[in-house]
Length: 586
Image (cartoon, rainbow, N blue to C red; front, side, top):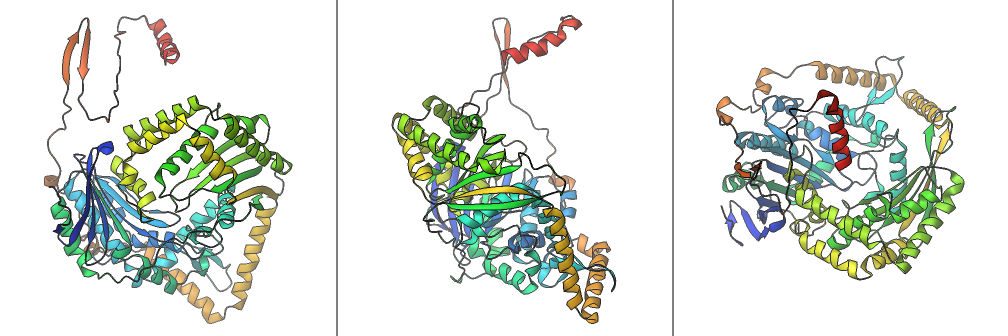
């Protein structure tokens, strides 16, 4: 079905229609007039259909409310009043993807399936979960998924417990989490990125039921939503379903303010020294981290973003990368790597030395600046740069995401532009950006990007993360003392209340869902499943003494060729040489 621009289908107005050669898809941008919901539909012949509903969820503190809400939304809803609907759903589903994800500024709920009925079932359970969750009625959801006081008896030891609380304690057992947290706080002191959207363990217990519910009421609104559809589907029926079952029940208010505030640049590089815990007897040799993180423009500048991603690969990813080689030769760390994070309004370029020492900090930063300055003066390695452009193009064209559906990864990718009020289709049209990147090989384009974004840019932080022997034990003692002090301030009645609530939570967790509740979960019948065997079309012909087997497919201008040789008559003792031969020839 072709959708006409400015036409209205079941409450959705078509704002843009464009064929995207790069992914062989007809793209449509729509808006639901009544509720304000945004929708992107990529129509193609891929039967692995994808649906996702996402919300812009900028955190205002470190309580991890967005992360806890992601967990809690999947703990029962209006239509599906089970404790964990998705556990039962997957038993009767043919889904190719089923999950939810919390990012630093958004929360995504994507599903995928090749079966039409299954796809509709998954959509319905997810939509009911995000718009009509049961945690408003069940106050134990926050206690289970977020945090609660754990107490078995009046003389027992008081502690915190909860799914997300324990998960984030595990996350912060890694130096990487401390390093990222310190960098983000320093780079973004005035906007949402300074907060840990997943939740900082010490702050999670500050989340109340009232703040929890208010976050959902504020951000889980259709006018703050981004609906994504991909694949071969009956779009008319899908739009009719979205409108009649969910979106028509909501009125756009114009009051939802979820915009990401732009962080004004730091006037000079911030210098941070922080610590991560190691055991009291642990050897701290070569366990220091140095990282330079730089805020580089905006995610909506797609060409610059691609260029910076390309520069990260060229400067840091291979043994022949100039910056990596210089840092390794200088002996500032055992491992040199970097990153470019584009899934935030103001992307971050980072350079890291792991397995270092504190006194190598100045050497680390001086080698970075000297190497980058030399590149801007003498020029970047154009051959390596071109090789990385070729690699980038091949990955974009091939779109091989392992076991993940292609449409899923495309849907996550478009949010890097769409979430910040950019055009979601633009990020899919990569040919023009690749052409510009290739044209830049003929000029000083890349040298100027290094100069403007990495050297002359003051919006940076240098974090030195040091191991602190005994910090782990000291933190545990401080946490135990804190819990003892909290317990000492509670009355007998308050303590008994926490004991009762803890017991009730355990009882609810152990109580199976009723048959009536379980019966609400949609399951596939045999009649819903395709009976025909999937056939792969092939063409065969003889080429001299060889046999050609050709599989016609749309491979986005990539040719895949495999040669097979009959070794049936080879002596057994020579078989190991075949492995050696393939390694040498490969």
